[in-house]
Length: 250
Image 1: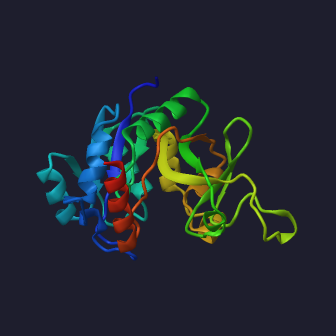
Image 2: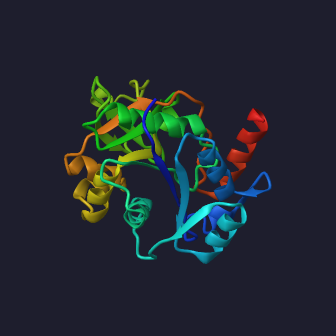
């Protein structure tokens, strides 16, 4: 088992594809409540909801969550998590797990796994998880983020394109490919460095913030998730898929 870690749940009201989704109801409860309850079932020392919206803060406090109001100028959940680390005074070697507010079905064991992975590799700045891609549709979809790693589990690249690519633009079959799971553990020092750095060209091209960490030369460890992961919620349609997942698994 790894050492102590903290969980931050960045939650905002604005969303280009699904405004107010953190408060959308899933099985009668706000998405945020599902995420918070899952995080509280992990081995985290504490769980903090970080938001800049009083509507979200009110709901979070109502379910008993600890809330920290953060700046409205943050560009990402990473920056929001970095502000929480600064306000709390967490040291550079502390571990923070960023659990996204649109992941209501994240298994608590996955939160523990990503924290343990980072603890197991002292030279790593971050850790994250992945799952095997099993369909050509997902392999080709720009909405499915892929990751390739070296033999020891160090991330080499993340992309919305099909990676690894097939030779000669083959239209048949697909290589072994892995979907990236948007769950991250950071050492606080790395979290500060990433949040303070400007966006890099790769990040802008792919619209993937984790490429900034690779651009900065930071090591990201990747492992295959041990537990079944439910769908994240990015759109209204995803909400129904999440509800169906709950019905099947419940």
